[in-house]
Length: 263
Image (tube, rainbow, N blue to C red; front, side, top):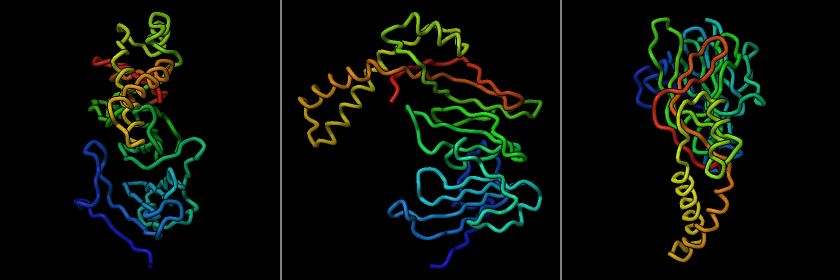
């Protein structure tokens, strides 16, 4: 099958963009045929054009895009969307970040991680002009952009951090260190509910996989899951905001503080 070019108009219903991200001038997708790595999937090149640069994603069906790149400059708009690497491409080092294109805001390019971890999704932010990474973190749910009079890009999100201790078993010492590191001036969260929910979900999944989700299976697997989750490092989740200039630092906001065990 020949490669197909699909051009997304600005108001096309086939191109979905979060309202908080800048709308692209256009998007082109090149179909490369069936993926060699994922049955039923198709390899493709996606080129997303903005004023002054283009973002390219080469997805061959493996976990994470095969290549993420930014083509800066006004001429990027006339660049052909193709799998081959253009000499002007600033390629994102896969050892630094691997994932998929997420969106653009005021000349900053956002990428998602290639998979979620601990119930959250990693994201990274790069400068379009230089392809330099300026920030990365992990979030639960969507990113929201905060309006600022200085026009700097600020994002608010539910931040997810895995810590190196187990809050339910050593709450005073663990929380003293964690809260100081994260700047959280709050009482330690009650992690028991989060740990118990995780254990029950783990037990239910195991029983369903065995096609025996009866009461006895749930009881036995829940007891085993509790032993496993009870020693897992804690994941802390809380509202945060970061202003993307200089050396960005995520700062806590008012809101719920939650906790559950790491995967």
